[in-house]
Image (cartoon, rainbow, N blue to C red; front, top):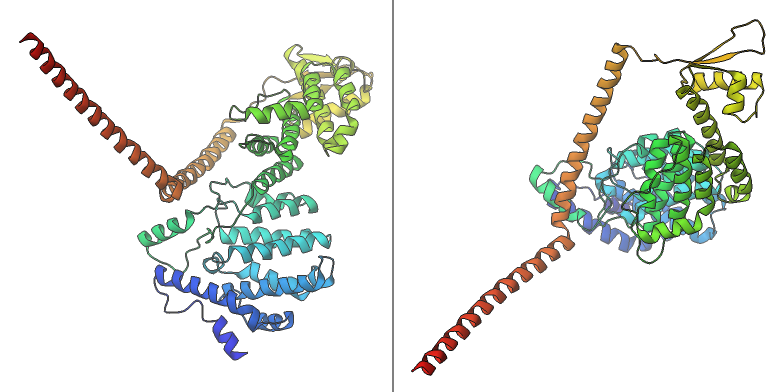
Length: 496
């Protein structure tokens, strides 16, 4: 056991003082340890004993490899995720949490496959035990620890949003989903890391968030993350951010087929536009024509509901909502449709302010609410709008009759100049920080592109085309001159 521990603790070494030495040692250690681990540890019990003697913060790579072996061996025994050994609260679960709380990102990025397996175990075990809430914070903190900017998309983003939806802990995901994603792992990451480390020098405290080899991600996982993120924003009623996430999904490029995830995102996108803006919106111009045809074919009830909404007729909208009740329920969009109906009423009540300075609550019920509420209910509805939505209006009783009340629209509801200045300053500061981060990530993306195989291959092909074009021009000119000379000589011979 001492020999095994000595071998596992051999990385990192104090001798790794440069980036090149650290990377070389990390690769050799990873390959050799993976190769001999199954011979060193022939049972989950031995792996458990080894994990007790390893520090996950100091020897993170060794801890990850042993933990991955431990997980795989336990799964082989259980054959399913319902066994007690794979559920939250057992020893394996606690070992995995220990790694997620204290790992060293410089070491972990070498083992993308094993890291994904551990995250998959954590999220899968939490789902199988109906305890998704237990895995949310460890996964979220691991994302931030690996990449404090959360600017690179990883599979952990997908696991986090799914867990938050299952546990209905929507606000916990905000520190991650509020960050803009600028990059997806690619084959150019290794060259970029080497190039950047070679310029700035190696520092042990540096936290590279890119994996080598890159963590493999599928097209569906990318779509799932953004539709899950959009659903979280919908639950928080942040409709603008939800619409942005859904727009990313519906505008993804397609070749021969359109994913059903994109169709579901389009359905929600239509409803969110009605809720946020009270009208329909044109799809982004970059949407694929094939995707657009598919959306129109498979989401006709949603487009019909949107058409009824913009018609301004409550009875028509209500009939469309009732006719598609089964469809909304099957698509899990019944809650959004109810929000659409509420949005229609809000828009109708607000629209009265464009025509009237004041109006009785009876007229409000007739003109905007289709007589669906009596005077008392209409008053309560108006008060709720003023309190929750900031509706600029007041409710007054001009007479002693309790059944007579009027809604007076306020025209001067501007904020104080000091409040506006403070709000503007905060917005400017926030936008300035976002622009700095955007510029930094654009520069990083440009450098990655310059180091990618595709870009180098493009440069070679372009150079060959330029060389061929220049040679063709010279040859054509030369042939043309020769032909002219010969023709002139023939003409001189004929004249003589």
